[in-house]
Length: 286
Image (tube, rainbow, N blue to C red; front, side, top):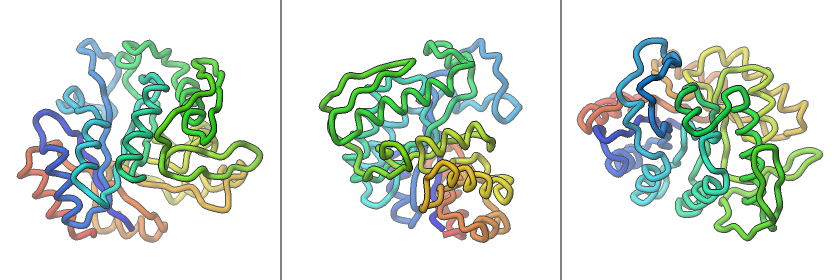
């Protein structure tokens, strides 16, 4: 089981270069980072944790810039977004960012995709909250057209692109899907709560699921596999990667019993000393 990590990089934390170097030297598998462009002061949306919104949410570094730094000083460490708020991006520009980082890291990128929780942040980007899942689906399809081997047009409800020369291409080979075009792009995982709507998105345009906290997987993983098989996505099973996990020996043993291939452990948004102490503690799970 690969042990990766995630952290809220901010202007007050350990740097991406320092952490990436330490992770690779210590034998950790990967580094994932979240995304928030800004947090409106007048926010009325409840915090995901239910309490006051932690300070780091409003100070996050740009994930693609941070991961590019991490890629430049490592050879094996995988890199991921946890998650990219796709609805808040221009899809043509985002397709270029994703493909460039995947190319420069020699295929080490995982694109974590999410729909967001902060209504006010999304509104500043012009996102109609009730349609955000449809927007993400549409923008992912547009990006897949740009990542295709041959110039491919796309006409969608929320955007379009003419058949275009668009390089570099993501390093990962297209994945076959029954009755439709192959799935292009880097390894793609979608975050969110279990249910038919989320699973339909995963089976349509992703390689698997990024469940925050990783609770209830004994019941939900079989349901995802059933949806995957109905969509004709076999014979390879969907990947399930528990994310932002606060580890314990019992919890990690449970993931191994479920044949989970990768777990992403939460690091504190702290300075170098605090983060390295946490890595020392997490070394028991390697």
